[in-house]
Amino acid sequence: MSNYIFLTENFNEGTKRYFAISSDKIETLNLSETYDGYGQTVGHYNAGDYHMDNSEGSAVMDCTKAISEKFEIDMDNIHIIDNDGEFEIEAGEGEEYSFDENEVNSFIKEWRKENESLTEVKGFDYWDGHNWKTVVTGCDFGEPSHEIVNDELTKELNEAIENMSFEKEGFGCKVYTYENWVIIDSNWQGTWASYELMKVEDYGYLQEAGTSLPNIF
Picture 1: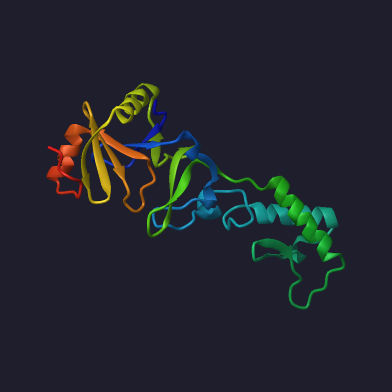
Picture 2: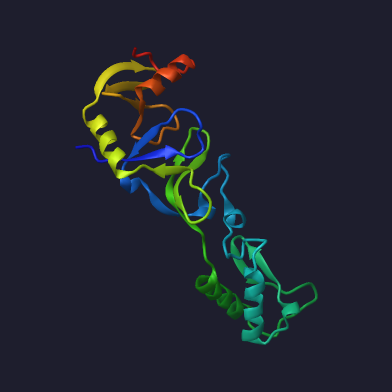
């Protein structure tokens, strides 16, 4: 028996489509490391992370205050720089530190481990043929790009895949049917689902709209 889970798009007002994937495809991801609709990484700023690389956050200031208290240094004399992803203290021009910079830099590393926090989401990354993209299936804030369908419909959709009958092969895809469902097995670039399913009437609507899907009626 097929045992897929199914996703639907949240921001598509057109044909209702269901995407079959294996459940182990969904992972916990750091939102900052996921990809937006243009293939760019979201980053700590847009993710709202408590992170020293978030220019609008308070992490750098909080770490500076912690250094000041730990090493008894005036905060005005503490300059933290981003050294290729490693945040380190640096003396300003004409300044000399009376403390061990390596010791302070080790403190910064430990402070980051203990205090920085990253926003997490559920989903997975995929290559669309041009850029990396992310399918988000769960998040604490906002709305994910896709929803996981309910158990009752999952059973029906798995049954359709299990009992599907071949209809026709088209450009980069094979089309199957079962009862009122059309099942598409696609090799198109950017495909991330094992199968795409839709109602027969929706498939017919796409045919009328002039898509490249083969005519099975």
